[in-house]
Length: 310
Image (tube, rainbow, N blue to C red; front, side, top):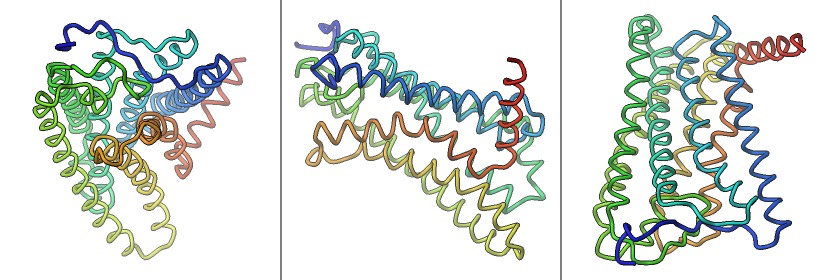
């Protein structure tokens, strides 16, 4: 294969050869996917329906749930379908769409987590200026910037990835189309431009990470100055879920794209891919609802309303 234009399809990783194990894989992924759909849909519905949750923090949480729904829907259904129909194939256009959408949702989520850290910083460290800095117009503009930056990054990344020459076959050791896997199929002299884009993204991601860390250093410094234990507990309950989500999302994503080739192996790549593509969208609703009384109350009322309708 001299270049990517001669490819009609790619072959994804087959989790199992026997029909029984393929069905186990299908059912396992189906359970995870339904859990992510249910959790994020409940978060979105509760925030939309409860006027008390029409605040900047919950507005950004709604956007996070939308991004999580998009990212897990990009990869998991195709893997489930392949196991169900006993195939490994994904079309060239389907692979391109997977790469674009996954980069779009993950890039946007990274930017959104940074803005959510800024929101928490303003709420705790500059409460008197909160209504000015985080007004409805500013929040909408920040959300629009998040989605636009994710789109632009995905266009750049996807265009670069699929412009390289592929001469190492079409089989990938992953259950979805992933940029590092595509680079392994490239000719040795044609992937440096895409590596440069990855390094640029890593630098921008590092800048966002530093911003988040600095924000939380100031947040925790301010929280520890709060005289009442109840005030400290409320502040921590607002910040710790976001910090847990950031840590899980960034650590697994950065490791997946920047780990040295010397430690790369198919089992490790698979575990890391599951961690960054499936675990955050599934556990984010649980993390945010566990320590949030307002959200738990809104979810309880929503579930009671649904039960009354039946």
